[in-house]
Image (cartoon, rainbow, N blue to C red; front, side, top):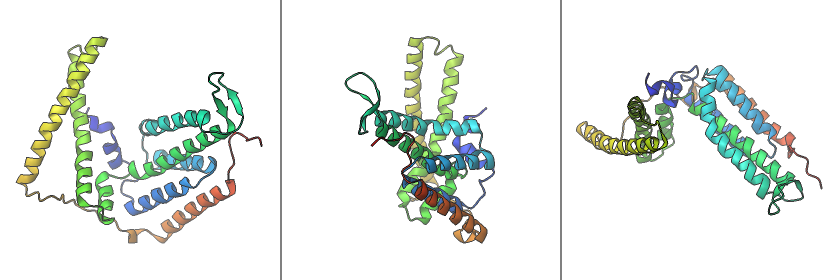
Length: 268
């Protein structure tokens, strides 16, 4: 089985929303992300996370296990932020004292940490609706429409392409080492890991030279030309516009009515 069968690049092209209008998904993701940033209570960001998760798993049919893996990194960073903010960024009396160097958790710090946690999860899940359901060549097409410098777009295309190529190379080398009794002890693990890193670096360098020569032989003039699909913002139907506007207005109204509701009451 190829590593490409269980990666982001595979699922972006094999889901129920991959053919939906790219502009509509981009508007949904960006507007939801921006509105999410204005939340002063974790309630609405939490709802955004739940709604986007339902869209990704229920509608797009992205496997829940892969989605959980995708969200694990932002979850880890956000959880660490909760801990640090609970201990070091709050004001007021401690609701729980660690008993060491005067450290403890304050209600204000815990509320800030929880708010940041859910804003991170809500924002990342909103972007995931776009990232996990859209092939990257269509996303890069949006870059051209926004007049992002072509050299930045081309570099992003090449980097994205070779990430998955070298993941496949790395997996092949790793499996080869395992079949030769590699990683059976700590010293063997360290030796094999060093060899793997060195070989991947060498293969990366060689592949870069080969790729440049291949592009140059095909008339590369400093710009990559991509086949553009026929999506247009004018193709978004009136019903879709209404649904998008109603959803974003409800989210904004939810932020307004929830105000600064906290998870832990702050005693004044």
